[in-house]
Image 1 (cartoon, rainbow, N blue to C red):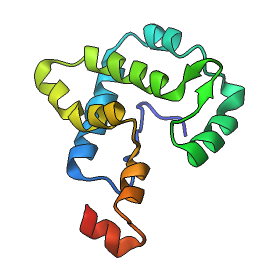
Image 2: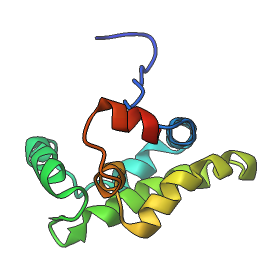
Image 3: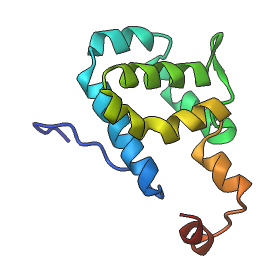
Length: 125
């Protein structure tokens, strides 16, 4: 829908620390020079969006786009955002940084903790 503002919907099933991390990530992206970010993401092609979705749903971020690992692209986005935040705001990014360092997605964490149903997820969160 066309609006006078950008609506960013929250990601489902996150802990408070990840919800705050995502807010900080988006803030850093919004504060940055969008042309700089676009240049960093030129490897991504809009016509390949369905392919990226399919690959990520099967492999997490363990795939390549051309010769570039998806993890490297995520790292570039993270660094872009982080560089646009002050040190107090950057501390909220720690949960995301820890995932990037471990090369794990939130789904990997859930799978590793044997989350099999809604009750397990609620107890985990």
